[in-house]
Image 1 (cartoon, rainbow, N blue to C red):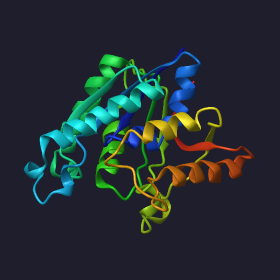
Image 2 (cartoon, rainbow, N blue to C red; image 1 turned 120 degrees about the vertical axis):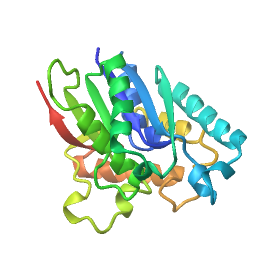
Image 3 (cartoon, rainbow, N blue to C red; image 1 turned 120 degrees about the horizontal axis):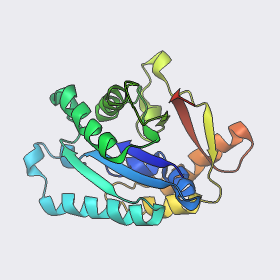
Length: 227
């Protein structure tokens, strides 16, 4: 049994990037928790304070409903300002990550890719890799980056920072759970051909499947592994 922590920037990232793989972990008896650092959705208003609290509460309710389908043990919300992580001292984000790493002591962490278009995703990666530096009696033995559709593939300018997966997880048995969980996110899901549509998510999984001769796959970039 492994202890796994998904560290995501926004509600829905924990499904988009790793939902099928998490369900596989849960099915084999692993314990999986999720930390969502950002509140989500508030960047869509001209001012953060202009977001109706009921809408934000509903988004978090959707996250909890999705978590039930996937099998997350707990979902923790830090409620950092949406798409404004660059307005916060990086140290404050690191401390938030460190808090949950210390409490949960995960063996494996999945988080955002360092080259994503979204600033919150990049800051999340920086916080995770700093909080999980291998010093003393560290618990985290594996760190993986996941792809976040509508962010990872839209960053056209970073050349060497593009997503270069080297770990491929067969999710043929759990793709339906991933899609059902994503369907819970009424404010985040989009119509095809948007990357956050259910059809696009299935196509993305099929595309990675063709790389390794499988039907449906989630792809990851291994950042660190300690045996």
